[in-house]
Length: 445
Image (cartoon, rainbow, N blue to C red; front, side, top):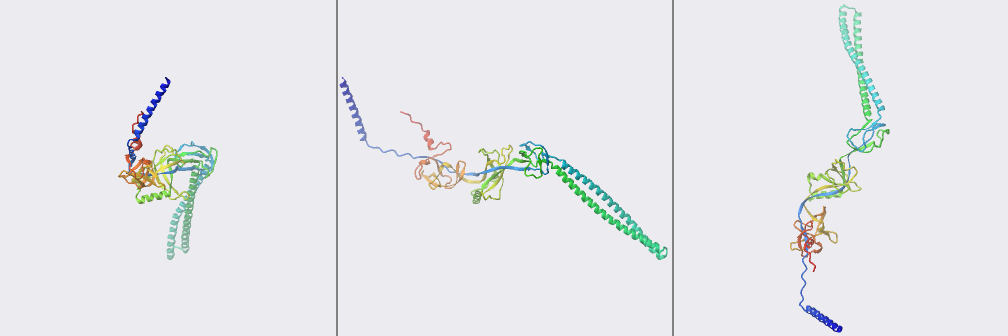
């Protein structure tokens, strides 16, 4: 029984093997069929268009106070009071320190007393001048009377009405009156000079009083500008010296605030050449507007204004300074901070911007791009790239409006090969990879 089962299994195996061999032979004898042609690769393209672009440059800079004043004493003395809080906002003219005014007050009082004495001396000199002028008037009357008598006596002597001695006495009186008048006039001149000297003394005394008053005022140290004051370098009881090297404190005006930006002289020359060639144009008042990036990369919310550029290039760095002014109402910007300023360079009316992934490099490092021509074939173009504008390249040569530029599928596109161009979108839809992803998945058997 077991032998019969083994024979049956062997026969079944031989039958199946023969059928399989026959089917393989029949398949090998069937006529051969050619493989289907490879599909045309798909590439995503964008149509090159000219657009109006404002060119900007990102430059490093540092902030500095709009105005800064070191507070130094102008008189010496002991500091009696400090009348401000460190780090607080200060108004112009606000009292900051008080220096012991006692010696300065004494000097002022002495100058005031000297002025009063000078004024009294001037009054006496004026009174003497008035008296001498009155004496001149009286003496002039006496002289006229004496001269009249002398003339009358001379006439009477000729007639024998008076004696010669009486005539001589009249002549003598006239001569004395004339001499007295001359002396009185001389006294007037002397008194006039005395008055002038007294008035000069008054002016000197007034100047001394004004100097003492100003010096006394310096004992009250006030703020020359408004702003934020820093720490005090002295305490109450310290000795202050006139014109000392160490300031008592420093005030800085922070609203608005300066941002000094560094630009290379080579970049300036390039910009001038671009303006002269007409490729770059001015943007009017907007070209003076400046934006700012803080140290952490966050944009500063307020725009600034370009004020001026320095006239000297630093020979060690080959750069010069652009000074900008920014409003700083919340004091977010502090002096000495590192920032980056976005400065407008100019305007390009017919600029060509292309996605950065559409540009590659040839073995020599030159930028190239692939475009699809009218016969749906790939053509390689050598291009000239000016700069990056956001996530795009600014192309100055090699492309023109209307060119279909390959953005996706560059790996499958070879110069001279035929391709199927589909529109490229920034979100990835419409690209060859997206088309593959949108196909339904095959069901498993």
